[in-house]
Image (cartoon, rainbow, N blue to C red; front, top):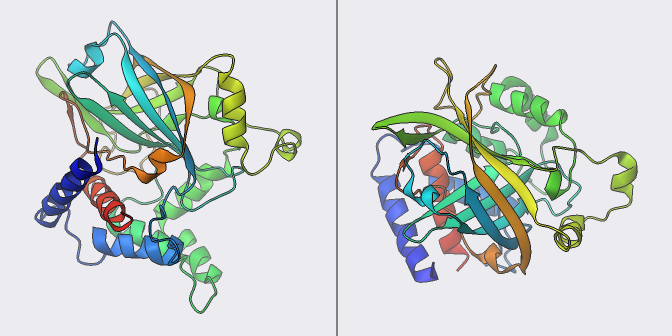
Length: 318
C-alpha cells in the first residue's frame, strides 16, 4: 500500500475517532498519547524515528489456511496467502534480551487483506486510554530523572499494571521460533449469519521455550536477526494460528482480562516465515483496524484510540 493511501487512511481514522462519542476521552486522547510517546522516546535529531516498537526487522512468508475453517472469512478461502511480517521489541527497547515482543502481520489476499498487530503476552498493561497514557507518562524523565517511586506506587495501586507485571514476571526470553503471539483484543467473527467473539493466537511449531542463562550469555543484544537468518537457511519458522472462542461470562471489552479455564479453539492455518527483508517496513504502519470481510472490530475502549495514535505518529514521522 502506497504512502499516499496510508495517509488517506490516517486522515479517515482520525476523523472517525474525533467524531466518535464512544471513544473520545477528555484526558488522554490520541493526540495526547502521541505527545507522550514523543516526550518519552522521541529524538529531535531524527524526527522520522519510529517511537514505539522502535527496534524491528522485516520478513516475508506465506499463510496456508485450514480447509475446514468454520468462520465466514472469504480471505481465508484462498489456498495460500502472501504474508508480510515485522518482528519488534516492546516500546523503545533496543536490547533483544528483553521479554516483551511484538509481531505485526499483514495477509495480502487477492481481493482484501488482514492486518494483525500482536504481542507475546495474552493481556495488555492497560484497559482504557487513561491507564494507557499514564503508564507511559509516568516514565517521562523530569529534570533528567525518572520518578521511580511514583512508578512503583502506581504499579501497586492500579490493577492493570500490577497484574501485567505479575504476568510478565513468569515469562522468559526466547528466540523467534519459540515465541507465541496473541491478539489482546477480542474480535467478532461471522459464522452462519451470526457473530462470535474470539481472540487469536500464533503458537510456534517448535514449542514455547525460554533460553537458559547460559544460552543467553552466548548471545548479543542483536541476536534475533542473526538467529532468524541462521534458522531460515534450513526451514521456515512456522506458527499454527488458532481462534480462541469466548465462553459465556468472559470479558470481551477489556484487554487486561485473562480468560480462565478451557475454551473452544479452532485451527485457522499455518504461518510460514522464511525470508529476511531488512528494515524498510520500519517506516510503514500496520493498522489493526485493517480487517477483511467477515471480521468485525473489537468493542473495547483501546482499539480505536490505538489505531488513531498509530495514524498520528505515522503522519508525524513522514
